[in-house]
Image (cartoon, rainbow, N blue to C red; front, side):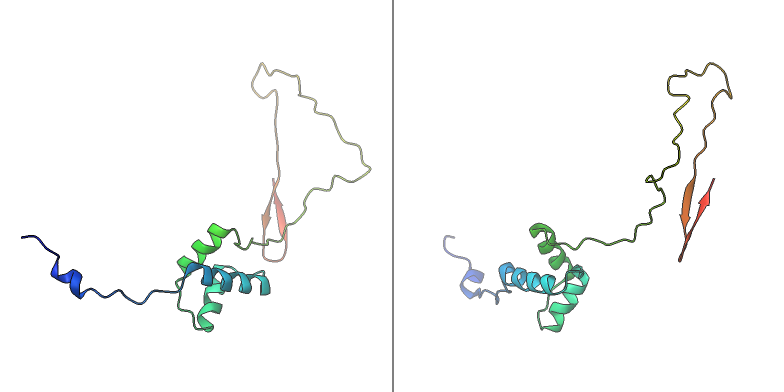
Length: 121
């Protein structure tokens, strides 16, 4: 049986969705107006404008075109190296330990709280 398939004769293409370049232009416009917006807020903004789009597609378009928002985090400087106090030399730089308990090491770190931080030794 040679010939065309019957379903091919009745096939009608669906309405095409908006092109990615149109969406990219909209995303760039929103990102320039609101530079702190990430893909979730941009998706919500586009939906308020009447563009039905998935957040995954917005994220993909932003990632491919390099317009993802960088996360701003507050940074706490814990070390102040700009002081006039004496800096002590490393006394064990060339020392090779031969016995147990010959060299001890201690370190401190800080634990962040909501309003401040505390040192842990």
